[in-house]
Length: 241
Image 1 (cartoon, rainbow, N blue to C red):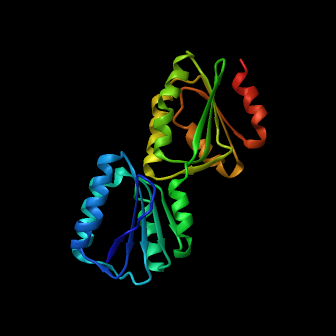
Image 2: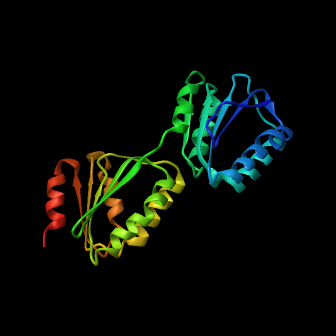
């Protein structure tokens, strides 16, 4: 059985699942609700609660769910899965790496935390220009919409300098949420990789391999990676003649 969860913020849908779900229930309760929300919002957030009595999906429901997912997964902004069922949690961990949106697992007693996570703003990107130096700071966990929000500002900064020097600050970066966020980041690198004359990447020691990978596409620029404790050295290097 599928029940709608009430009292969720605008643009957020919730479903409570118990017993064995049929294709008829998917067609009657889940699919119309999400499609209606996507007509009103570009992206929606979804919370799914799997009760202890949840037994799985019928073959028909699996087919409906797969078809629906292929059509609308790009419309999901966040997915919170709330359950204590080990087999559901393991299945969602495997599925999460394939989904374009961030997925977070919560225990049944953490429903308030799930609601809070769905309502929270995620990471941000801080942009600053001083002369020829453009500093790009990645902060927190980034979703795909972060890059869309900064695209115009970033293009404006790069248009103001013929051969910019770029300092990419990863000291407070916690990673990407979902495949679409990573795709947006790679698109950003692709769009601007030929512009910088110098690129310095500053990161914590555990993220140094990531810093090296981010440098690789920028073969046209002088590049160097620094650890967080060497921020001053990075700033001096990026400004040197």
